[in-house]
Image 1 (cartoon, rainbow, N blue to C red):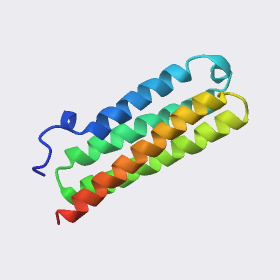
Image 2 (image 1 turned 135 degrees about the vertical axis):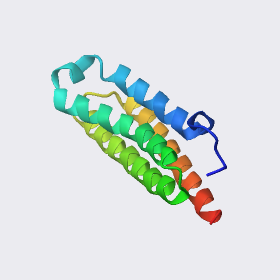
Image 3 (image 1 turned 90 degrees about the vertical axis):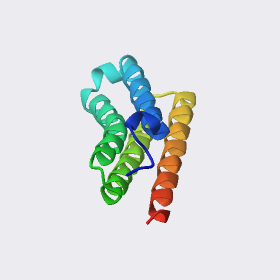
Length: 122
């Protein structure tokens, strides 16, 4: 896979890492402190996005990279669902929900664009 030499060249990986850090900070206080299950799920989903991007990259084949990008995209959708539930039960303000949901949608779109680009190289 010659289009990227190292994971740090992949902007969506960096964005996914930043999202995970923000989710950790978000869930480190408030009502999330008393809901360990939802807090854990949000964190796992957020971490899964960047983890799957890097795992696919490290597999060193385009086919595997694409497969893991799809998994990362799925984790992004999982995170959106958990954020929605968090907002509906009063753990997240509407503005925090909107911010994180929009971030997830943009990241998911960027992942899909990379998938499409990699598919076009075949």
